[in-house]
Length: 467
Image (tube, rainbow, N blue to C red):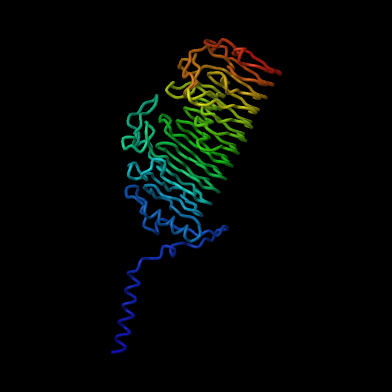
């Protein structure tokens, strides 16, 4: 009888163990790589990767377990299409999407948090030591948000009817890092965002390396990389081909300091590099080097509209080609566009100073646009070793100055090689301007300026010729 009771108790304990939930931490795999990080595969947590069933719970469980264990890698294995609502990265976790794996963002509003400023497919908040890598793809399924296709500009879905946001830009972003630090994003493709693609907000120490970004060339607001109120950001060897602004620092609630961008290729229907237009605080200590800008609507741009100041900026070793697209897109084929003016009657003017352009070559359908304002002067601007070629090859009409957003809007005006107003201490050293002989219609002056708004211009080895 005693032996029967002992046997019964043993069988009962075995039954309890078989019914108990598996400890998620025990699903980790000890790494045999040099970094020694543990790995957590989402398939061990129930992900099916068929592109139809949501794998959100499995992915989030793997992330949570990884973070609780002290950090490591969460693996999305190759060959899977993992459909998800918002997943939240945690401190110490690197999301490793293997080559051949796709993380697909949901297309329904209920796939995202209630607050519109948290609408991301992948979101890290208040995290340290986080990242995304692996050679795979995060896809926002942006085509599902197109209401009407148009080669001028697509009409997009907007979720503004819910009251969570206003205007026509109420769509989910793709990847966001908010209030985080020590971020590494590398060797990953970000594809077809419904809205902004990669958003860095109030972050410190971010490294973005070998990231490929592809947005629908006809869809608005699918920015490549937006850096908002963030400091110490490095962008290197990235390929960005999208409809809206490609690399866009913004200062909404704090300054943007120490941004370095090198070895990148960019094409866009908007501005390849754009400061603003949200510009309430300062932009300082930026360096852009060895960048190719291909057939974009605007090359290097600053839209300072809200009182912030810009200083200590270097653009070097940059090749630019800019062309006209439909005027519904901001931009008029300017290779360089530097502007500061109040957004509205109750906005402040910011200043732009100590900006260097060195070893720049461009071929463009329009000239350089340098426009300060009465209370927002451009000063200490230098061009050195710059070759500017002007040639028309599209059928869009020229003859417009584009001050948008705000300010004067679109203004009819003859085209000049360099237009300048409200500027002081401008240096042109070894600047060569060439006009294609068959494209002279509409061009009137190599330089256009009003003497009452311009002072202290210095020319050294400046040339202008027809070829």
